[in-house]
Length: 263
Image (cartoon, rainbow, N blue to C red; front, side, top):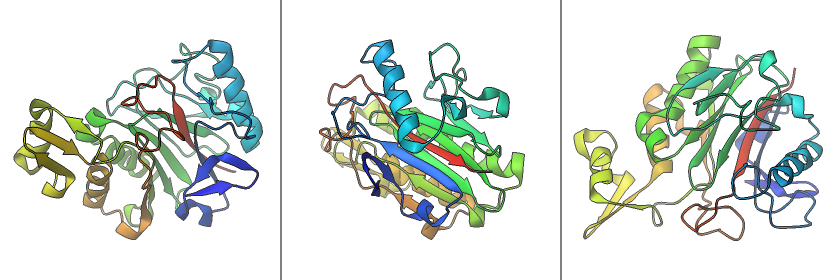
């Protein structure tokens, strides 16, 4: 991932930079203008006014207005919402107007910026060059088990005719396999029944560590998405807590990932 020019607080995926029609970003704790380390995009962990001001600063940094953005009320599931023009500015100024009970936003509308918020959960951005459609997915532990990223890819195919073989997937910063410890009951459903390959979890005595990013990677491969079209960030939000918000490190704030296709 590389920094935006003049915006050190915003990161990009290398693979999507090959597509000039796509604007995308991952925010960090750092403000895009470099003036502070408190760039909270979520309505938790800070005041409402501070969050709105941060979102307006994000608008300025990426050159989009609030009416382009669509936020979702994330619930750790795999529900899909097909975004249309009328959804513009959903959730930007308040929680109540966000897309309800949702973790997967998809659209083929140009000039709409889909947002997923995170603080250890894995943000996933999908882009289909053949149909100019995209998705923003929130994939935490439950969402990963339920296949939220897969549901996003399927929605791009079913709704817009996207070709899996051409699809691009970006698996963003999130908690790593060395930091994500879960109890045995939680781990059991990931380990039983061959749901995920054995290299996606590590057992150390009574402790189990999950590799959510690799689980998402394998899930996307099962659809026919090409491995070379999947980019996985090596950033762990807990290890890099000086740069990213991390729930496991005690943060209530959120960073975000966004994607928009210009028309």
